[in-house]
Length: 82
Image 1 (tube, helix red, strand yellow):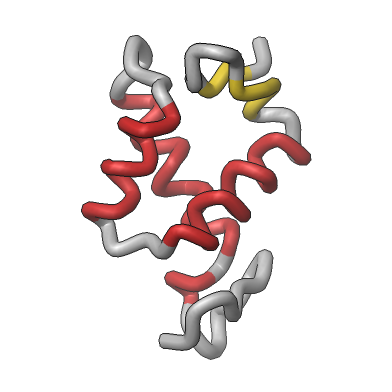
Image 2 (image 1 turned 180 degrees about the vertical axis):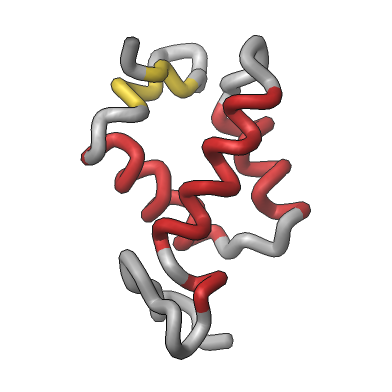
């Protein structure tokens, strides 16, 4: 697995390196833990799922671009769009 080799969709080579897949892991966490949106908690969960650091932040960026995440506030919480 090459670090930093991520695509939005990569079904042929390595689906687990696609931003769509890694974003779905983050969304599953946010869906199941509505009261815990601290970035550190989300990152810890994703690390347990063997998600790389760069994939995590690319996925957060993707979720922002598609309108799921509004911002990260001063308390380090993901604020989801309404």
